[in-house]
Image (cartoon, rainbow, N blue to C red):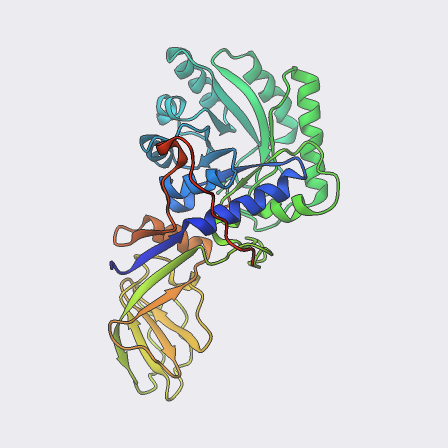
Length: 373
Ligand SMILES: *Cc1c(COP(=O)(O)O)cnc(C)c1O
């Protein structure tokens, strides 16, 4: 089998999605599944939809196009503000997009009128992450601008947390978003279909026992794919955290004498701080490196230490290696590592527990369920 490779267990993706969808449904919140970390991989996206996600979202138009080319007909939302140079394709491929710029919204409206359609606009509000977003005080005017513009329709508002700042949303921030939704409706008229409370970092807030206000949507990637809370890195109870695995092959096994610490002069080397190379530790070299994934984002098994990584090699220390040349090692990844592995040209994606989508055969086969963990 191809190595290195990314193994994705679709049954676990379906299970994670369904578990989150059901928990959030009780709170009146629907799930928009975010596919950007797996580059819009159609089978993985389909597993998310099979798990009950209402629609898909991606940050890149190329990924959205890939989904459409694979025959996905569900709503796809572009969650990164569209590039001015891409508005025609955005309107053609996506039902709606998140927006922060007047010029872009105007161009989307022109493109939509040319294509005889109406493009949905969700306005992204800045509530403290300090990445993209319209300032709260400017939101009303922008919303009115969208409402007045033929070719676009104001579908909702949304916020984003913990991407640039790493700070999870507070209850006060979420209340502010609800208040903004009510204000916009009061000022401009149309009912806001979507009030999107954020990404996986908002999940803990959404599952706590308190009023959720107007929030009725979350955009989730990491929680579904990795089963972890992005802010704390903790596993989310009841979810699989091993749906995605990176597999690499051992190409050298050697007991090396203790080395003086590696020179940091060569920027290709030692991008990861070297672990102490203790006596008696066997060094394994694997054929995978920084070009394939973020080696610092791999989780090490008990009894193994990450010694270092270069563009094409991963060096691991192991006390009692039962592994020989040609053996494979499996790693769980963080989001950054998954994202890079999914995009790396040398890494093939192997799907486990795939099954034909029901649409292919009309009636779906028996729905198999994993036992809860
Ligand atoms: C990436 C992204 C998401 C999904 O984030 P996860 O942490 O994977 O849940 C949601 N919204 C926006 C705007 C994003 O860029």
